[in-house]
Structure formats: structure tokens, C-alpha cells
Image (cartoon, rainbow, N blue to C red; front, side, top):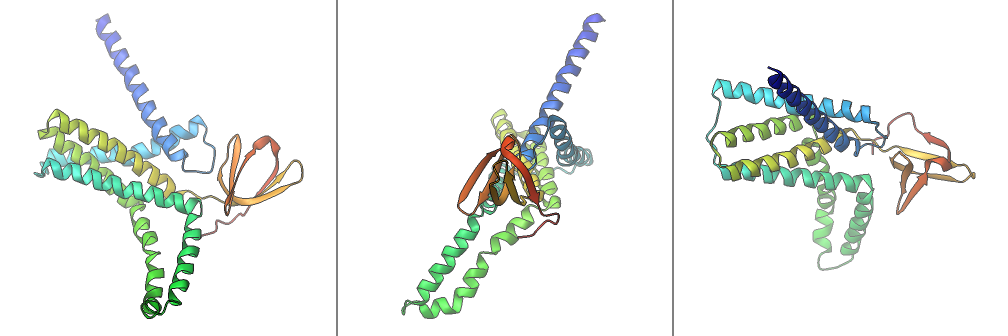
Length: 256
């Protein structure tokens, strides 16, 4: 009886450690997308919110599907392909959001517009460019539309449910190699979804920093912590928080 009690205590302790690790992991992943500095409690709360909605709800729903017998016969290669495509989409999304975050898109648009204007001077292609220039410029906004769809909370939840559904399908009939592969891909995709969830609500405020020596620096704040990370056009500033006297920010969030 004592051995059984000890075993249950060991299992409970291991379960608590695993849950805490999951909450801290996803909390840290989301916190890295935010400008604010997260304490350990904040990491746990953020991780708990993500876990409840995107993991536990998805698992519970797939258990319901399993009990109802709603199990589709999908070829293993289709499941693996689904994960690879999903990984590509959200890896691309994260890269795109980084481009926006560091304002590289503004530089790209400037160079693109300059290239269009130069092409208009070329007699051979000027007619075509004049006709299609507006269309070409508008095509740059297509990425905004596409990625705005993929960062939508309902879309993220749908893909989370699909990830766990794929795990259920593979667990029923897959080989050890397939189960391991899908498990690894699922972990990667859930991490990417957590990043997308964080980035979808992240805001990097325009800030004015007054240093203790009286010098002022204006730019976009990317991270607060021991060092404040500020970018302004093509310059980056890492400022020790002890050297800062005042940080001024707009009360109203500005949409770019």
C-alpha cells in the first residue's frame, strides 16, 4: 500500500512538472513576441491561456470526434504533407511579421516604387509598366490580406484542432516512425501557432526616451527589459534601463 502511495505521488509530481514545463514553454514563446517584459507568473498565465484554448479544447474536441466515430481514412503521406504545408505557412508568416516589425517593408516598398519609376523611363517596357504599375503596387498588399487571415484566432484554433486530429489518426494506424514524425511536426506547428497568436496582438509603440544625460532618442520600442531595444529607420539602439530617465509613449495605439 505504501509503495502504491509513493508511486502515485511520483506520478503526480511528474505530471505537475510536465504541465508547468508546457505552460512556461508556451508562455515564453508568446512573451518573446511582446514588447513588455514578462515575469514568471506572467509566463504561466500566458501559457495557461494558450494551453486551455489551443491544446486542451482541441484535445477534448478530438476525443468527442473519436467517441462519435468521426475518423476519416486519410493516407499518412497526406497528414505529413498537411504538417509541412502548415509549417511553411506559419514560418512564412513569422518572417513576414519580422519584416514588418523591423520596418523593412517600408524600405522594400521605397525600392520597389523607385524601380517602377525607372522602368517607366524605358521605352520598351514603359507602356506595360504604366498599365500594370498600380496592379503591381497593389500586389504588395496581398501579403497583408493573406497573413491577416492566417493570424485570425478562429483560424489558429481550427489548425490546432486539425493538428490533434492528425495525431489521433496516426496513433490509430501509424507505425512508430510515422507517429514520431507527426508528433515532432505537431510540436513545431503548435509552437509556430503560439508565435502567430502572440504576434497577432503584439504592438511596438513609438517611443521617446530621455536619457539621464539629457539626450533623447525616438523610435519604435521592440523590447523592454534590462535593456530597451529601439529601432529608428536604419539604426538600432540598445539602452541600459539605468541610463533612462523618462519614456514617453502615445496613449492611443496607432495603426500602420
